[in-house]
Length: 153
Image (cartoon, rainbow, N blue to C red):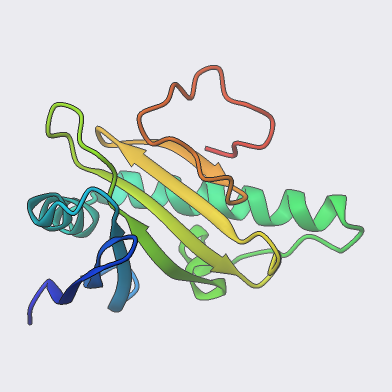
């Protein structure tokens, strides 16, 4: 199976699909820098996330879900395991940023069934979950410390 497929040079940059093992499906990507090597590195990095990082992403996503539901007057969902939250989200775009020091990152836009208007965003860099929360178009190279209230990482 090809990790990256259907690459075209679109108006906004390189576009195509990459296989995401975590969700067991191809997802769209966008590389505004038109960097095919960067696409490959980010795709490989996403597929090589270790269990600790994935568990952190799932726990932070679960916290975001429960906080959002509580603040909107709904009863917060309970999940049997943190990874169960993955069944309630769909990755919609892997954003391949300009590289600093050739460090790959996961910068992802996702849809979630509890917040259909804004969805959510993940940022992982250097094996650290830096941002989980509503999609705000975060800078994956930004400083995420101290964490803002809307950052559930």
